[in-house]
Image (tube, rainbow over all chains, first blue to last red; front, side):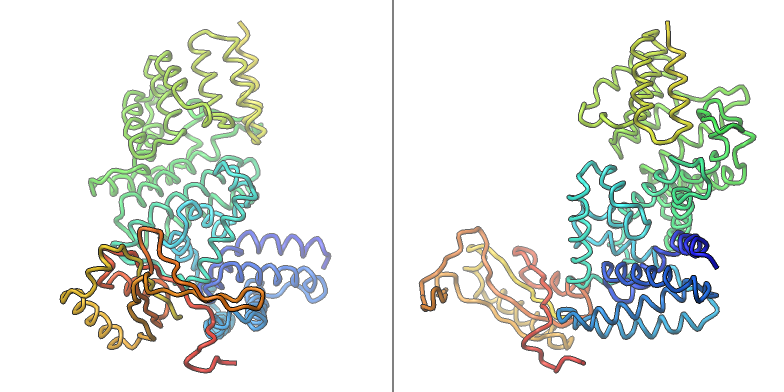
Length: 412
Length: 121
């Protein structure tokens, strides 16, 4: 077997199993950083040995086996970690049991998400930590999403991992009422992973696509843990509504298709139906929140009239509510769009102008929206510049081309 | 894992530590720790005014009065407990009679030089 085949297999295993393996090892060693190091070593060993020995029947089990040996060796070398020796012995035994069993190893990622959201962890590190450790988003991407330097972010992440080990934070899903405080962080991380995986989707085999799939899977796992929590229902409904439109976002030639011009036949009816059911279940709890509102907005788009008519005043109302819960730049831009589509483009533009300048710099949807509103107001030259600026801020080729086309159409 | 519960409190509360109710609450808490089998050690501390500091600098021993706390709160007592994890330690810290007015700092003890049982090989 060739080295490149091995490489492809290792890559696939990493994509599908890395975070599950880290969560499994960390849940038993209570040491996230050590689990990551050990698994890294195991992957290097796989790259060296699999070309000669062939790919093992259960690659994950092989990696787990090598990684837990590394964990134990590392703990033996380190005197300060004496306390974790006993835990590691337990880890080794339970890993052995998993290796012998025909069942796949258990998915402990949800538990790890709750560990990262522990109140003993710096709040500013919680969501980034979940994104990095559980969802495998790379640190540079996280740093840019949280508007801090990569160096500062990596320091924050290292500190948080050390805290988990040194303070002895246990690996378990918390019990009520405590878990309510942690839930919002878990929801935010899952949604951040989903959007990060949703933005670049031209290649369905990409890691980004896998991330969106993982986010939905974790949403489903979370719902099993807390079946009637309205915001969990809301988040899953939101992700399914977006996911339902995946295929329709690009035409046969790979060109970007904006939401209002998508063909509803290309949406997944099954996913929309499931999303609507979840949203109905959520509303029966009569406790509204950010994710239910966002899902409700997507629901209106999904239920647009056969003539393409969309109930924009209703969407505007939902954005007003959303700004109350999540006054982020995304909801402010969404509200401006709803104002303009409800017939008052000037008010929408004024709303955009009121967003503080330091928050809009690299936010592509802001510039695309602003340009769209300027075009509605017949301010062609400014609209053109706005679309160009938005185009420069996306790494999605198809979206960039779409924005450049809109820029070109603004010549007056 | 062993954790230190460090009680930081204000002068005002420190002055009232010998009230009958405070003493009774402290005693009950200590007994609860012992009954749970997690008590390793601990005590209330004398006032900051009773503090003396020792240093060795350039091979010379220096002993000096103080230092006195210049902050609003100071370390007034500590306990050491042996529990499975941080969450359990936090539960016990929350039950400390001083938790409603003082700050209870929960700090893990490192692999101890004063281990009560020999460390496993």
